[in-house]
Length: 108
Image (cartoon, rainbow, N blue to C red):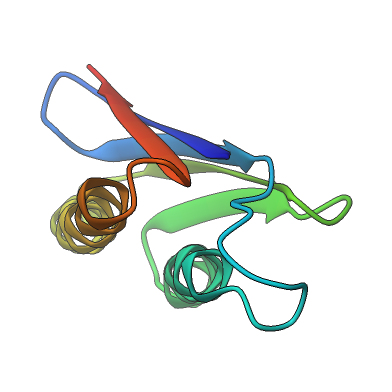
């Protein structure tokens, strides 16, 4: 199972996200749950990495592991809020559709 945790600050802005595990929904290279989670996390990281007002750190140190941490100033707050909301909606949707393969929690 993939376990994912997103951390929001008091304003509902994404501050961190970590994912670990393997979904077991298919063979390696053909796992739809893993692919969906990976695309969302990598795209969010890439999108945030190129935005003024946002500093993001993260890595995928090995298969089945990913983390990111984000910081922002006034110029980046709205964009980070929007990307975080999109990411949370996507991850929540995957977890609801595949509850045996993906667990997602949001910490505020």
